[in-house]
Amino acid sequence: MKQVEDAEILQKFAQPQTRNEAFNLLLQKYQQKIYWHIRRIVIDHDDADDLVQEVFIKVWKNLSGFRNDAQLYTWIYRIASNESITFLNKKKQRNNISIEDNSVELAEHLTAASYFNGDKAQLKLQKALLTLPDKQRLIFNMKYFEEMKYEEISQVLGTSVGALKASFHIAVKKIEAFLLNDDITF
Amino acid sequence: MLEEIEDREWMETAKELMKTGNATPFEVPAGYFEALSAQLNACLKIDEASGTGAGFNVPPAYFDHLQQQISARVLIRETQAPAQQAFSTPPGYFETLSPRIFAATRPSAPVRRLWPLVAKYAAAASVVLLAGLAMFYSQEPPVKHSEKAPMVHTTTPLADQYLYDIDEQVIVEHVQMSEAEALHATPSQDEVESYILNHYSQNELISAL
Image 1 (cartoon, rainbow over the protein chains, first blue to last red):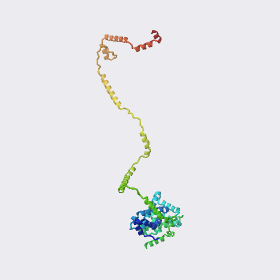
Image 2: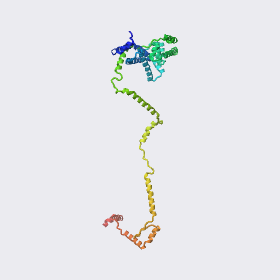
Image 3: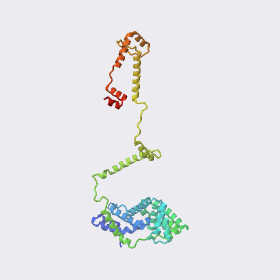
Image 4: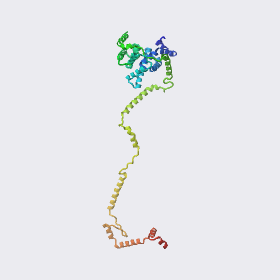
């Protein structure tokens, strides 16, 4: 199926009679990307499902005010990233748990959830990722799994390219050290 | 180009990471993405139907003054909060407060003054009376001239002088006349009755009648 251009979606959304059609095109184009982006951050499928709905409701409400000086997908990614980080922070506050305890809880979700089909190495990688701060994990995910360029990540997160590079390299070193540690077994 | 070179650099240093690959190990329930569009559209309709403020109105210009009102309330709260914290009570104050209030509400015994106010006036009146008596008795009593000799039973020199001044015959007549009056005095009806009842028996009285 041919992907529709963002400009076309925006043009149709501006017309009241084609608004719903435009939004359906937008959903077809971005729903999976946004779901996986959120899922890698919050780990749990049900949480990701709730957040996807929240994100696209926000997109629907605010798309009429979207300015063309930014790309549509970076704008949607920014909403998704902010919603996910806010969700994790609220969860920590609600459960009154530290960052370390939150990592342990998310790691338990990894193995307990039925929607994980990775091997031992992938499980170890995911557990290594959970030791990183949320924003650093987000940067690593966007660069390593989603293969986004630093410029794109910079537009999404509003962080400079240099800061992103530094953060990513630190994350890679931490994960490599974690993976090389033979004491950590599953 | 630069980014590709940079990527190669970190990939060479992170060989263990590269072994795992970047495939997503997560799964979704079967048919999840097929139904996701319909699910999201349904969510939008629900959100629009139950949108915040739907069916409700606010007074005119409510939101124009809302921020000002909230700021004012925050200021009031901030000024109140430290004032409440600045005061403290002695340890265990509130534990003993109720019993103390309860004890204070009980009627207490009336307090009597040892020297009431009336005593002052009584004392003053006594002093005045004593002073008056003292003045009265310090004066010489007036000499009374009477035909009848006064019944003086005093042994003061002044009384004796009065007796010497009265004629002896007058005194004797006065005494005799007083005794005669006492003898000829008629008893009352009650005195007679009591005398008869005391000195005569009932039989004697019946026979006499």
